[in-house]
Image (cartoon, rainbow, N blue to C red; front, side, top):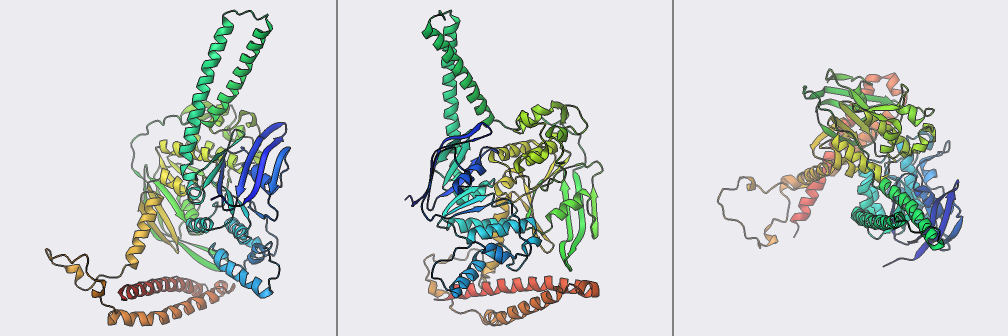
Length: 628
């Protein structure tokens, strides 16, 4: 059932610099709609969001919003105020209902801190101007959710988020009562939260009545139909041209007009065919030359240890870590921010040295590195100069010479901007340029650090195809679940505190293995004697009464359960005391040995605490299962 109409745009017209971006744009947004907005970079996605907020005026047409409708906007860029903390930033524009008391407002804020801020792994008292880019992004997300608008606009909400936070956000948005319009490259995220798709395609808004999970099939059918229509128009044009070639008397007015119409149709068809071909374009990579057979071991970590010191504390990132990377491996790397992913990559390429252990690299190993921070891009150089660093007009693309303009067109760049400075490019265009450079002549080990950020759907699919054809060794750091499923065959999961787990398969296989392990840990132990059941013993009656199960825990289990709450409380108190001591900024300078001992002890206490809490849950579930 359709909810209340909140906002409507009808027959909108908007031009920039003489170019018409929208002509006849029409759409409605109703309460409860969960809409994802897709389209190539430059198609007008951000402009459409600005039309919704009212920040962008229309040249013509109508924008109507229900009186009192509040629109929230999660933007990509956040500029923090000096001295402002997370709590004040998040609640800066929260609506206070008329008649609410101070106590009610404070209770509501406390509730939202627990419901939104803490699940996003934020400390309400931290200063905004001291947060990392990822933390600023999460603070902005918390603010957008806490404001509880009628319409929430989100521009790339999953950028810089850990996978567990993305999963939490999915659940939050699915149960949220307001309307949502979201731009994201994360296909899995869009599939989970959307029930409609707004597709900006060559200046038109196409509306898919299904969620993103069904969008590809729907769009494919639409494009196939368009292709058939273009072929029919081409046949009709051929007939008209044949008519003109037969020498029909063009002096007669009606025939002159007919020839003019043929020329107009030919130009229209040329434009439409060109636009259609651009839509169907794919980044093409030439076939790779077969490399000579060499040793399969590309890199080997042996008992590598690495800690990071900052703010008077030491954080363990790698602890006796051993790994062998083989030629042809396709490894996905995931984990929380600060868990050691970037440190691992910097150790691999030689930008860092391990504290302990050794790292051995193949003698002829060469790296191609896509850096999410774009440190290697010179903003003052043009696109042409970026790809042709030594001058000239050709690029060496895996052993073949390609003209720089033609190669940039493969990555969906318009030839008119090849002499434009990098500083003028959008985030998505910069990423495409970095990919073009990295993939022009990829070395035998290709590292991509969050390559999907700011890419549109089409470029993302093209990147997947290019990587499928890459024959070297591939390492990808990404939070994009579907992208990992489509590109890698192994997972390295950085769990924090030096713990790193390896899994065979993609992201879905990793999640399945992790959930299976959790279920096994939480499962009650089998009854005494069940593990040594004699072969051939008669099976129990499937309809046996549940009352046959004992209703009480064994003495041993009950004794353990009774004492676990006290043990948990003691561990929590000890962890709190150690954290208070480690918060002393002078401790490390005063007594480095004590600081290191406390850090190690804190890690052990937290592990013991987690183990005790898990065991308490197991015993409580056993007790509940045995109850009559």
